[in-house]
Image (tube, rainbow, N blue to C red):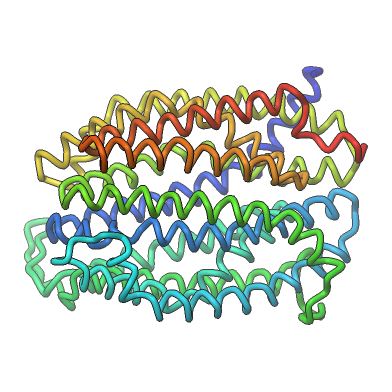
Length: 457
């Protein structure tokens, strides 16, 4: 690649990646604050909140997978200069949001009493976990709007609007947490003692705070999309249009099956960890929260990879597509080396933010330092998968992820924890082995050139 091409591509990549990174950072910061606030209520509260978190991933990732279909289609037609098709796809995203959002609202609320039982949550906290889950999913329609409409905007190279809406969502969540979780209490600042009002709702207060902020986010992102100059669905038909939906679904369905299967794997994984007891569940929940901050560079680069590779395919510019890979991969590895090093160095200090339980801190620090070593390896498949999403090739990632999840992580964890009687460390070792397998599979696929839709150029 010529130096001029590199210098031209780098600002474009960062202009798309940094708002997504900042958005993810703010969301992670709120997760940190949520976990710390709930953690102050005790290990039981932390375990009750964390026990159903993988079901949350399952549902959110399924909705996000549908968004990938719209991202691929809109990025490609935008790259080809077909703005009318892009706006038509935006209209279809509205219809999809209504159908999917209402479906998951009914499903999650009706099953909220059974989910903690299926997750093998300790009987002493099942009722608490169920109430938290039910409140969290009442605004599922608005959560679906946030995910799908945010993806539509990113596909049109607008990553700043979702970031700004997300920032306000996070502020609302934190402020409401402060007033809803704890009881009325004295609060000292600058030598003055004030009475801070509080509802004293515990983890239900945390759930209400999240539900209200999700509702705001769905309304705000809908308004922003409706008023958007380039991608607004205003005036577009909301009746199903299979000329638009068919190519979107062709990409979305393998990705949705992949995310559903892998997220179901996360549910099985968490269920086995929950069976290890409250301490293991709390350490796992906190370590997952901590670790999520250190994946931020990866997800930011994946957004840029998906959008720009779709644009290149739409413009039928094979050189630009190849150059994109040459820039993104070393950049991603460098960022993940840095984030992994920081995670390894500060693991105990980060665990201490969320718990005072010495055993929880010790166990969480151990697994975080284990996974920190694998961060650079995990960054490679994240970017390659992003490029494949952009060009509409989602079947191979489906096969790779499902084989890795169920053949390595779940089977290995079952053998280690349920048969051999090992603990949380063995489960995270299986998770790392899964990530390393993805690195090998995606790297070989990339080096053989199979990630590119060569027949289209």
